[in-house]
Length: 300
Image (cartoon, rainbow, N blue to C red; front, top):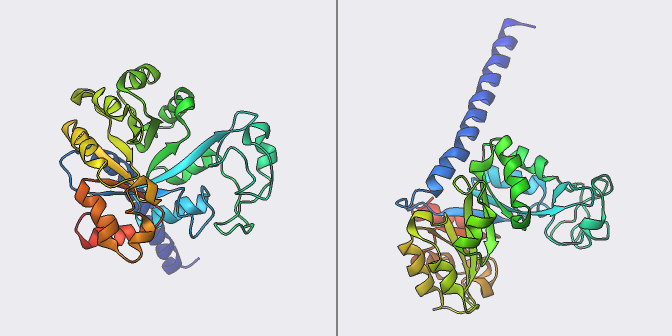
């Protein structure tokens, strides 16, 4: 090996080390920024990863999000018959793989042989990932929102703490009051990033928000609303708690009609409207479009 070749190899290794170090720093920076209530930075959350360009909940869909500068990836957690956490949105594998059956009735060795389908239903070369594999990809690079994980919170938080990943993970729970959260997460409540999901179609939505005190306020509240106008009072209450407001731009019944598909032809009428209401976290199926829009406004 020539000296010139050796120097080039060392230089390349140095660049890789620097890039990895910067990546590891980013998760801590994002975690701190998420808790910074004074920041005007708007977080972009990719729903099931970059599923338009890779199968949903796949390792490639997650890696695409990291590469494009997404702040948080939302993934779905299911438990197999032999107690392995995998990424899968549905309780069955029929829609997203070339197999059939319920996740809870199948073992990881069985599931690991299957292939994921893309958004059009075509079978791909991508395999179902375990949660462990997914977290290895995200480690140090991006925040992670775990959906369908609340019932497994204790075992998951123990694992995440052992792996030094707890700062990267946002748990969420459907219409969970402060008392429920403190009871369910009593063993880790000071270190958990938690977000209640509040649907404004349910009669007790206000009681859920008001159950929290400023000193114990969640990092954010996720609000769902079918009609424009329902959100204003909820956002006012959340702002008083100094929590961030998470709004989904996925489908019109989550955001009063200001969704991703509207954004394709009317950015200001979709993403601009969500920002004007006070959204500081937006979950989207079009992460690149949203990032570009936020950058044009100096918010990302």
